[in-house]
Amino acid sequence: AQSVSQHNHHVILSEAASLELGCNYSYGGTVNLFWYVQYPGQHLQLLLKYFSGDPLVKGIKGFEAEFIKSKFSFNLRKPSVQWSDTAEYFCAVNARSGGYNKLIFGAGTRLAVHP
Amino acid sequence: EADIYQTPRYLVIGTGKKITLECSQTMGHDKMYWYQQDPGMELHLIHYSYGVNSTEKGDLSSESTVSRIRTEHFPLTLESARPSHTSQYLCASSNPRQATYEQYFGPGTRLTVT
Image (cartoon, rainbow over all chains, first blue to last red; front, side, top):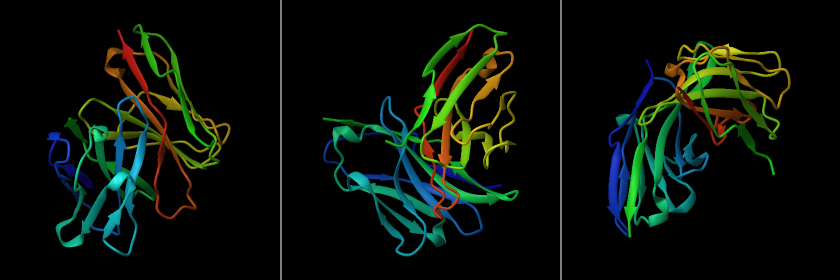
């Protein structure tokens, strides 16, 4: 069965620290990969996505992610976090199942950035 | 501005009551979804729709039902709420002509059944 695994459930960082959130998926077909972010009290919103082409994807607010097909991974990175990056981050993969496309989400990583 | 709306944002209700969670989108998207999310857990797809008069069950079994009479509206109904229905419910939509399959989410309804 398809699944998405996020390695860290809670991450605490100080401002200016570097961030890397791990995401691995299990799906043998062609994948589209996503990172969504949910700031406190706000909608889930798309941070970045991989569809095809360059495996290094740049998103909003200085985030980037690298698709490594051989490792089934799509880790999220940011070189220097800010307090405003405090949020919950969800990795998702689009998979085709039973004739329809669906998003499979990881359990999320809650990031707290301290000033 | 095109967006996706959910009401109510928070609902506390007693066991046995019938409830309807509203979801509307102004993006003209054909596909719509309902997810259930418990704290610290994955989002689980409970219902989806390809368009008007189309409804399908998702991966997670749910006692809720949905309807899609209009493109922009996708309400979810629980005929008799139980404490096990306590959760957050997220509505989403997507444009099937958008090859990247991304979904756009509403703010969610946090339901507590006492």
